[in-house]
Figure 1 (cartoon, rainbow, N blue to C red):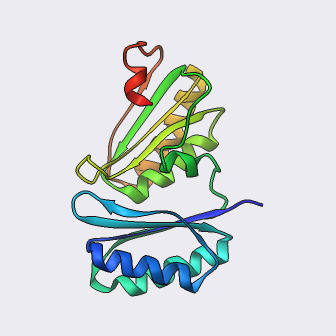
Figure 2 (tube, rainbow, N blue to C red; figure 1 turned 90 degrees about the vertical axis):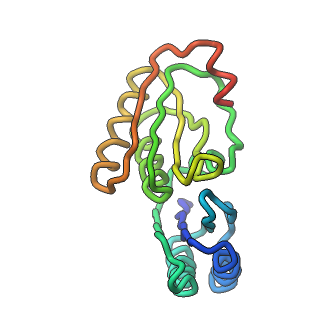
Length: 182
């Protein structure tokens, strides 16, 4: 069964923790992550069936009140997004590398989903705001054509959503750079 993913972003840590608690109490969802992000924000990301995630996000938005920043729901999200968010990915091998960077956490999750659905790619990491000034970035690997195809799909989505910083494709990464990605 395909799962949905939902995220609510808050500009109050206290309100974010409170709302995350309410989000999991209102629906049958699991927390993917609920954590602080720079600069002084809080994100709650949940997964479950589409209706449960929609209900959970809706209650998160309501509980956020004036501390609401942004939210998303992606039905049928690409499954590799979940371990990428938690940093639990270990690609079988690194080939070409794609990097996409955004000012928006929500936009980056949407773009990452589109990137992964565009070709045979492996996620490396989906970093959401921590230690990078509130920005987000996604790194992924595959053969050069797949990475370029994924990047093109991510760029098309980013143009619709806005707040893209940059995207790069490295066809043949140096062995000295690879350990910094893992």
